[in-house]
Amino acid sequence: MTRRSVLIGTGSALPKRAVSNAELAETVDTSDEWIVERSGIRQRYLADAQETTSSLGTAAAKAALAAAGLEGRDIDLIVLATATPDQTFPATATIVQDAIGANGGIAFDVAAVCSGFLYALGVADSMLRTGMASRALVIGSETFSRILDWEDRTTCVLFGDGAGAVVLEARETDDKTGAGILGSKLHADGAHNQLLYVDGGPSTTGEVGKVRMKGNQVFKHAVNNLADVLREVLELTETDAAAIDWVVPHQANARIIEGTARKLGLPMDRVIMTVDQHANTSAASVPLALDQAVRDGRIKPGQLVMLEAMGGGFTWGASLLRI
Ligand code: ACO
Image (cartoon, rainbow, N blue to C red; front, side, top):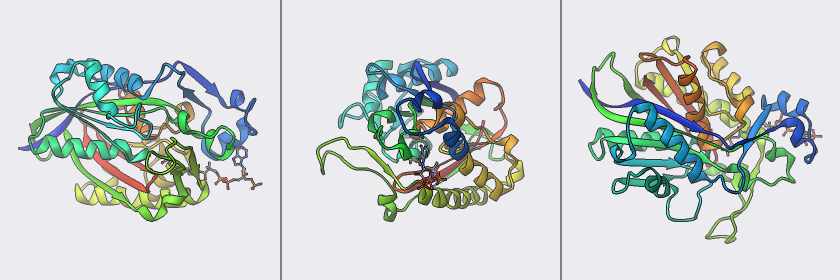
């Protein structure tokens, strides 16, 4: 038997307002055709002034708790991944903690942009396996629209807002067939800061700043880094790619998702795609897609699921779990 972090509930939340490419093209010099062809995105959800990273994160957390049959007081660890916190400090995780009544446990944010959920999952998994906590909420939540430059058509059409959450519980499970996180790999390479960054921050400009991205250069790194880290996790867990039931990738671009799947020889009918509906929701994209596929019945207990993401930093990572 092995102590593992077992996924026992998922949840997600989206802002009320969906904005189609056509609607965006009324104010941005772009077209539905360009956005769909280059990225696969058809619409995104955009938060209004009342919808915040903590409110979306709280709604996703409550949905995940309900799915697990638990209440806030049952949770002793919250790790929230975001690049768009409510405040510079305290951590948005502490706001969610108070909102769900999990006061007293551990709560902090993780900043790894689009890979944030994978990083948060890795940290929570380590803390659960070492006994620092027994039940964790891992949340990815973003109001990315707040840091978009709506005059820059090369970035603003690609992103959206939302949140996703999972509940993990430390359990003793069977080495070979038991549920839980089987292995994860995380990486960062700070040399590529200028390809994808926000041009502001508390310690530099004193302003929040806006997203800047050299998209075509990020694209090339993304496909290679993701294929490499997926291979690493397969090797670490001694798993054949053919045994994977579902891949839940970061939803940045349909072409990156297809390119990565092709490199690994994985058929697209085993890949969860929500980029058309949600666009790139950064740290929220993987748990949002995961929750959708769990709720619509595609992802089932006993199945092997690979999560993967790449984002600003660069940061990237993957995690294999049995549901
Ligand atoms: N509408 C219409 N035309 C546009 C738009 C737009 N919204 N944006 C750019 N164009 C034009 C450009 O000006 C350019 O025109 P030109 O040839 O006359 O100069 C042309 O379209 C091609 O631009 P490219 O940038 O070369 O287009 P590309 O095929 O590379 O697609 C895209 C751009 C979609 C951004 C792609 O490169 C991509 O998805 N990159 C990766 C993004 C990503 O994965 N980011 C990582 C995660 S994000 C995070 O961590 C926060």
